[in-house]
Image 1 (tube, rainbow, N blue to C red):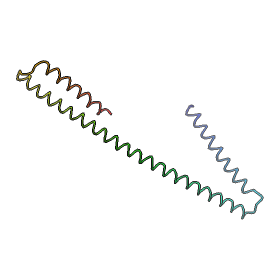
Image 2 (image 1 turned 90 degrees about the horizontal axis):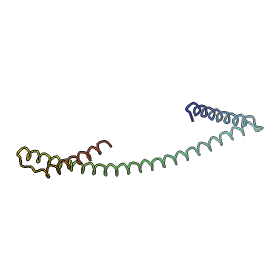
Image 3 (image 1 turned 90 degrees about the vertical axis):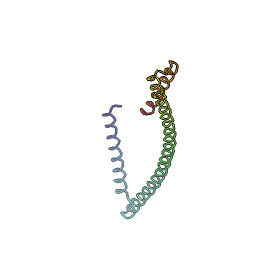
Length: 137
């Protein structure tokens, strides 16, 4: 539904609600009861509506509180898990960095062999990719 049609539907629904309320109120006020009885009826209806609204609000307050508690618990669990995984990824990246530094020194001194070089390069690439994945989240 387009925004304009949606807005028009809301306006029509709101108007209908207001008209219904006005009609109800006019019906009560023009009823063949005495003013005293009518005022009692209005007061009773208003009191009932207030009590029902209060009950509904209390229930909603309790339900949303429970949902917030659930979200907080899940957030803590997720945070702990993510923190642990990120720490592990950072530790692996540090190890790979240290190996790369050692290999660079060995290369500089002429002591490194090709299999070592390839393995360390692959390890550093994997650690870098893994750490970058966490930083994008």
